[in-house]
Amino acid sequence: DAGVTQSPTHLIKTRGQQVTLRCSPISGHKSVSWYQQVLGQGPQFIFQYYEKEERGRGNFPDRFSARQFPNYSSELNVNALLLGDSALYLCASSKQGSPFYEQYFGPGTRLTVT
Amino acid sequence: GNSVTQMEGPVTLSEEAFLTINCTYTATGYPSLFWYVQYPGEGLQLLLKATKADDKGSNKGFEATYRKETTSFHLEKGSVQVSDSAVYFCAIPHAGGTSYGKLTFGQGTILTVHP
Image (tube, rainbow over all chains, first blue to last red):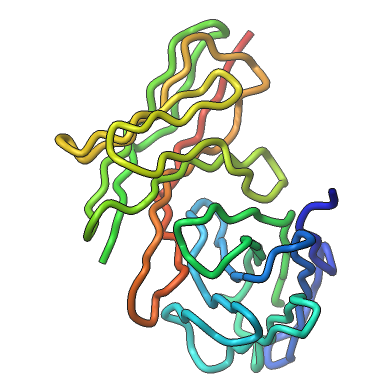
């Protein structure tokens, strides 16, 4: 079975621009979460979606938004990009919305803001 | 909220050496506990998990036991290989409030294994 897929792999944007990152979960998984990983640190939670509804939100500004589609894929949008948004953005999927189920991560999208 | 504290690294070992990476947690209730591994240039892979006290997770020669009395979930491997060189993260989930579904990760421990 295919794992979690993310696109694009790499992205370079300029300050002030907007970006959209995409994620397709493992088949049969209904929950998608987004994380930001700055170089040298552990991933930081941004959002969780389950059955197209936002279930959890981390401590990120309103410039960050996301949605989940009927096929359970998801998009993460970041507006008004700042240099500090440069990071690896990870998507994770799990079978259920419960946090007690393991989450499976994709390879990530490397975003560079110049 | 739930949190994990992971031993600082980096850790450098010779091949076939014994590995321990310490992780302690604070939590409400008894959540599942996870170890993830991140190889260079890749995303995170679930290495092992434990769902209740005294439960032992194991995978690829790695083991970790969920110890309620010491609030610990230390990762161990009896004989490391060069291919185990990676960053290891301890993680704990949240079940309440606006952080529902969140995994909180430790700061990560860089492991380098030399031949």
